[in-house]
Amino acid sequence: MKKVVLLFLSCLVVNTICMAGRPINLTCSIIDPSAIGHQTHKAPPKNAVVYLEDYTLSFDAFEEDCVIKLLDEGEVVYEVDIPAGSTSVILPSTLSGEYTLQLFKGNWVFSGEIEL
Image (spheres, rainbow, N blue to C red):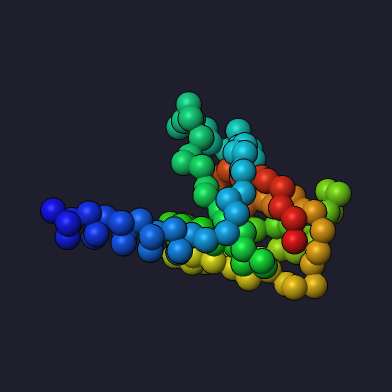
C-alpha cells in the first residue's frame, strides 16, 4: 500500500514540475463561424492550458500546427508558428510589459493577458 501511495505522490510531483509556472486564463472564440459549415459544434474545443514561467510558454502537445501572437494595444509585436507535438516555446527576452496572448488553433482563437 505504501508503494502505491508513494507512486501516486511521485507522479503528482512530476506533473507539477513539468507544468511549472503561472497558468494563463484563456478565453475561446471562433474566428469565422461561416467556415465551419453544417458541422457546427455546440461547444468550443477543449480549452488550451498554457503556463508562463519567465519567458517560456509551456502547454500540452497540440495535434495540429498552431500560431501564437503577442499583441500590444492591438498591434502584433511577436508571432511564432508552433509545429504539432511541441510542448513549449521561448519568447524573446527583449519583450517586457503586458501583452495579449493569442493562440490560433484551427478555426478557434484562445486569448489571455500575460506580463513579461
